[in-house]
Image 1: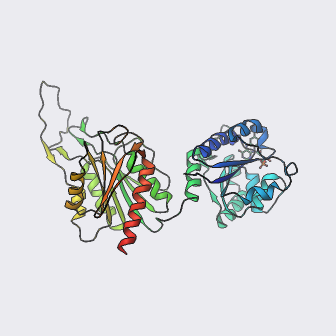
Image 2: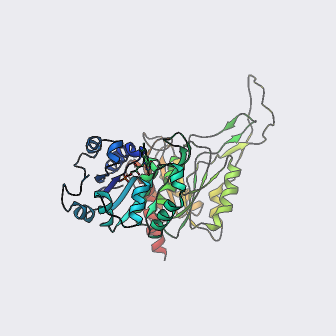
Image 3: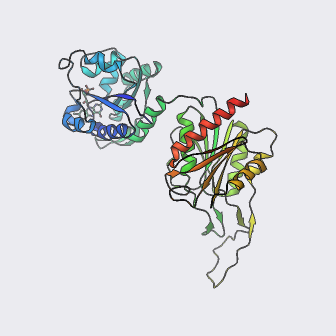
Length: 393
Ligand SMILES: Cc1cc2nc3c(=O)[nH]c(=O)nc-3n(C[C@H](O)[C@H](O)[C@H](O)COP(=O)(O)O)c2cc1C
């Protein structure tokens, strides 16, 4: 996601400084090149050697050691992240103070800046600090976190540095073209549960990973996102409006409620096709045989397809075997704009894995994608949606 991007990382004097090692590793994993500047105080918390080893490159600590590096470093950077950002660096930056390598380089930089504040909650609540933070926000400087939790001082409160994945997401979002800005994306994800009695239910193997990836990518590209999710264990992306549901019936109600506000609707949930005719209110006793009487659930996509006015609608066809014919029939039969076919019997595709191998079918074309991460599949799906939407205009 950050291939070819050049990131400047500033580390300041906070107990959270050791977490910067993980941030450097993640940035490099995503393909970024990372240049690190450490303040004097940060070196009391973590050694420059540890940071240098993680970065695999020379790090910068002293303005006078490599003269003019405070001008040359920012010139080539796509983004400047300060993590952890002390109250001190935030105060200096807000007031134009340039008295060490980090604060001076920051002043010489005119690109995107993200700060990840970390401090004791009393410092965070201090009105002087807040004034500085608000002033930076008014200039478009993005703050990620801090989060609530137990702090290094043993107290509980808001002040913990945001976790690394959250920081990564805000970096990637800042460097992503906001081509879905103005779109209201509605995504469904996960399985549904159809209860037999208060204890037992029928469900399916959907993990929700594909739907959550779609929601994350839509958010990253600037859309307003609503995610209607069945019971899953995936953590929802930040900034997404999540509606949790249990049964197919609840999923339908939630979809119909959110649909009028949506411009793109992606039905990636694996909604149960059948539900028990009646749900017992007490546990069914154990016996030799039990016959379940099931009835078809309402087909949400079919219902949406029949609407006169509807968003750009995308369905998923999870099939066993290369049944593209069935996917195409579904696309036309339910009047969708696009359907994403995946053969769940293939290795590393479909349920509960982080990868998928799909074919994107629309009214005109069929696009076969290689095996890739679900996030990359989501990127390809939105690329195609935008292409088709533009052609319609
Ligand atoms: C044990 C200890 C922990 C500290 N943790 C933080 C912190 O989390 N956030 C913060 O803003 N300051 C913290 N400080 C204070 C800063 O290190 C101090 O303000 C320092 O001048 C910051 O310098 P810098 O911004 O140049 O790195 C801590 C100090 C000590 C001794």
